[in-house]
Every structure is written in structure tokens, then in C-alpha cells.
Image 1: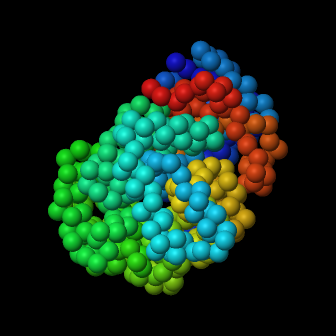
Image 2: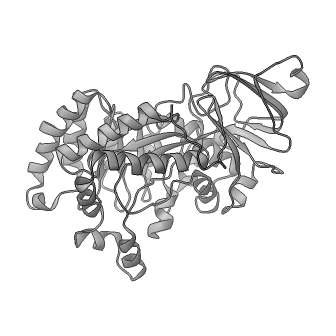
Image 3: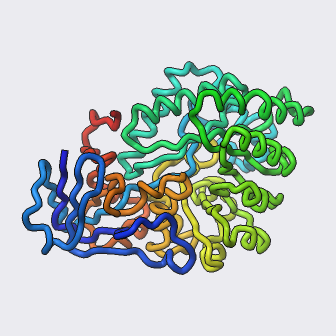
Length: 422
């Protein structure tokens, strides 16, 4: 299978050499070729350049992209797509004045999702989750990190891992599984948190490791959930099975989770709605990337990650959806790119970098995804006709996607019968 995309108005995120991450001032630059072509064979980007060099290239499928923009598919590095049901009743509770913490304290929140998931069959859980994923691919996302965390029992967490494995095997999208071993404290362990941490470290993590699905481990390091000592114990247990940290930190409080993540060579530290200079300094000259989740801030009406402080300090930044039923029930990366510009005060160039190459880095896949580079995987967005790429974040509620190419396959996103499975 070969595809030639011709007459591209703007080809974005073009790198002749394999860039893995973009930091600080460099995030303001988005490499572009105007009036371009792109040639794909099977699942791989083979060649690209100005249209004047396109003559003589033949392909089985030719796409005329006149007036359209082509860029790497979005890389969503923080999602909780595998869950059961929804939490619309809590949405109404928040409208009526209850906070996220108050809802959790009365037995809602993550505990509510865990109960639903435990009662849902593995097949039903798979069908709900793959449907969500395919809807998001139509919105332009080609790579997803998917976390567990709504099990809260060993059996239910392993069920989630098996569902994620099946999605990984059957979806055309790139999937990175993460064991969110410590998401909340089950009701029966509220007065004996140490026993629950022991259950995680001595039972869940070893059994999850035997499945050989997740190579990343996550903890919700937050007041009322898992403190620094518990988080470190869980990260150490994960490290024994070669699980690298990708952790929730600083959503509501600064506990020292950023520095702890760096200490344990975390690939990413995510949320960061609260941030101080110690956190910024801890991240400098490390391999750990900060990840902002503006959809969560929007939905919960909490502060936004101080992206300007992060980028202006010379650090990289990724953005992701945090797609989940309780605090961010949208996986639309087009909205996230817009929110990054409007609420995080990022430029369109910074936001697109954060949602492509840096998003891929935050999943450990930027060697093959996240940029237009020869030899990388062909996961691409073809927009509707636009005057300029800045219209993607500018028109925040519109759908800019015309076609997607996922794993080298051109897909008709307007066809309700189209699927994105191998």
C-alpha cells in the first residue's frame, strides 16, 4: 500500500533528523514546508518535500490536499479510556456546589467508577472502551497512553490490563499501557492505608508484571490519596519489575511529588496545576517531562498548569486530555490544543509541539511517532481547508479534521461503519 498526498498547503512538524523532544525556546518553532507533498509506503513515511520535487512519484492512492494542512496525529500521553459507565450525577453535584474532594469523601469519584468497573464484564468493558478510542481517532489522535486505576482490587486491575492489551492488539492506533497501581483508597482500607499499599506492592504489581503488558507505573500522589512515603514505596516496587514511573502530582497540593518523580527517573510528571520554583528546579537537566492537562482544569474549575513558567524556564511541556469519567470526560485533543493557547497562554506553535512530538516523548515513543520524519510511522491528520495552522486552536469548538491516516491506512472518518482495527 502506498499513498501520495499532493498540494499540501502546509506540512507541519517536519524534521529531517529524528528529534525526540522540544524544550523551552525551541517550542516556539514549528518547522513547516509550504506547498508540499508526502509519500507513504505501508505504515512508514518515506519522502516529503516541496511540490516542485514531486514529479515522477507514483502511488496506489493519491490524495489532493489543496488548501489543507497535514501534520502528525495527536499523541495523547495521559488517558483513562478504559472505564465503565459514566459519572453524570457527580457533574450535577459540582454544578450545585460540591467540590471534587467533597464528592470523593461521600463515596463518589474514583470509588464510584471502581464499583461500576468491578461489576462490568471484561467483554463489555472492552466494547465500551474501544468505541471511545475509535471516536477519538476520528478526532485526530493516533497514539494513546491508557491507564488502569479504576479497579481498586487486584482482580479488577488485572481485568483492565487485559482489556488494554486487547485494545493494543486490535487497534491501529499506538497504545502505551500504564499500571495506575494506586489511584484511590478503597473504602474497606480507609483506616488501614498501609495494608492497601502492601497489597499493591506485594500482590498487584507482581501479578501485573507477569502479564507483561504495562511497562509504566503510576500513583496519584495527593492529599487524601497517597502521600510521599506511600508513593515512593510503590515506585520502588514497580522498579523491581522494570516499570518506569509516570505519575499524577500537584493537582491540588504540592507534596514533593515532582522531586520524587525525578529521583526515580519518571518519564513524566502529570497535572502540575500547583507548581513552585523547587519543582521547576528539580525538573531542569532531567529526562522527566512535565505534562499539563487543561481539560481537567476546565471541567473542575481549578487552576491551570503554569505553562509559561515551565517553558520560559527552558523545560519541555506536553499536553494531554486526562480523558476520564470524573474530572475530564473529553478526549478531544483539538480542544486541548486550543485550551493550551487560551488558558495556558501557549502559542499555537508551542501547543502543537506539546501535542505531537512532546506528547510522544511522554509515552516513550517519540523515536517513531510525533513528527514528519523519514522512517517514522505514518500517523497523520489531514485538515479541512484552512488559511493557516493557527486556525486549529483559534476556532476552539470546530472540527478541523477531514481525514486521518493511522498506521499507514487512510480512513474515512465520515463513514459511521469505518473502524480502526487491524
